[in-house]
Image (cartoon, rainbow, N blue to C red):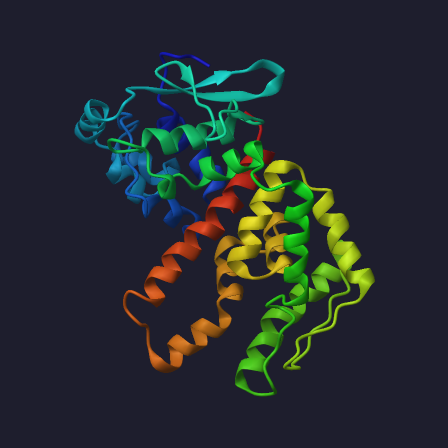
Length: 304
């Protein structure tokens, strides 16, 4: 990596965004953070209309704002270092970043390292704010392993018994919407992953077979540390291992997963209206917690 070249945020903006952020829902994750970069504008308005990323990030690109942040942060520059066969490291003023557990932040792909470097570059001043660095948080959890892997898998298996795609309302309008949205996902999970999960409108919830739970376990055990942590965040947010797995496999987009995970809330809003400082905050948080791990996993698949 040319240390004197464009900033990580500029590289992310100019090279990766057109490939990775091809859905508006993904862009909201970054634009909602007030993200701005110190990289100079790369082209004229005419060329931007063809290949540049959306205006939300372009407008945030302010040299003045970047200079102001450098004066207030405890670091001035953010770069990506090649760590050889181990992968890539993010560096602040040429010092490699470590995780909260004091482990080296070694990332397997250059695109992922650029994305996390951009999160550091977008920090405005003072102490970094973890809630504005979702992909850094996922990577740190995967490396530090604050929760043993087996315990993490056991916790995720609990969602299979109460999966939102399997717990249905009694016959009616909501149940019809659930069947329309969730039945194709359960069919996909059965055909693709071998998960024979069943749906039920019983107040006691569905009763899943040992074979179905074992199939989910095998899937989780086959994930590496990075994907397992992404799976955990997606499952906890969507209340569904099916929706989370569909996101990891590309069966759903982040926007579709968001819609599927919040079907009941959406119908409540349609009937009663949105509660300010309630529904809107939940939507903002869920958007980030679904979009960030989805992008994270896609960046694991991209080559430099």
